[in-house]
Image: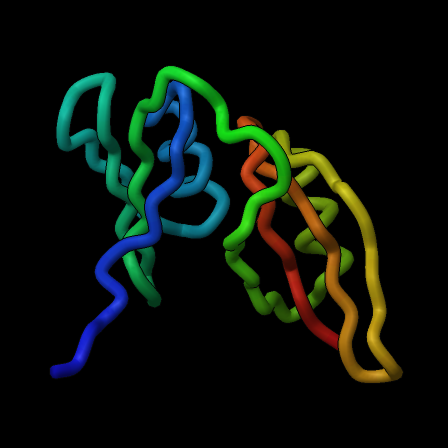
Length: 115
């Protein structure tokens, strides 16, 4: 049996608002499936993103996060922070890999990765 990645789901306090932010930043379309409770973002490429309302924020560090590969890491990090993301750190591994750690408006961590 083979499994396919159907959706990556985020816990959040406002699914429509956060789903809309992700759709706008990554070229997707947001669809509120259950008003105030669950929003899906369809991306041009890759799995769908789900945003579900939960009563309490997830404590501590995210154990899973998304990595995005833009053409220009610095320009994309600047664009995302201007749109409301928070830069959490910059890292480098050798001469060929670097990444910027960001958080969306509700604190979900993701990275932009490149050379």
